[in-house]
Image 1: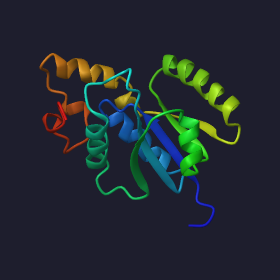
Image 2: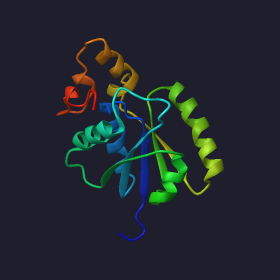
Image 3: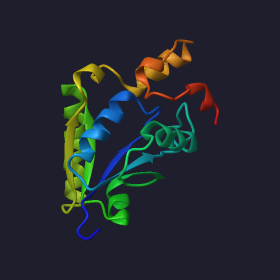
Length: 160
């Protein structure tokens, strides 16, 4: 596709939630293609391996067209340049998210002025869902199905 508008939706996605899926669907209304990429920082670890997160996202997006799933290490702006993304998508739930994301967007803009950041609020029904909350529920033996995209059995991914 000539002059394709490609956006990157990066995150740790540990795990990928209904809120993430909602933001992705909104981003697809704005861009020709969206790459959902698991940013991996080995010093942070995580509940799920990067490979399990990629697999989970692929299952979560189902038959959504114009979406690619990948993983990367290093600076997000460098990965954007590598894949030709013109924009970084960030989901927002609260004003606290905005404050943090705004600082990161400004730093990214300084390093890569050719790459824009767009903030997309999650739908109100997902605004309370965070990966941290889902991990806490899971680590305490709770049922997190209502926070995850349909068809995701979290037990398939634990310890992968």
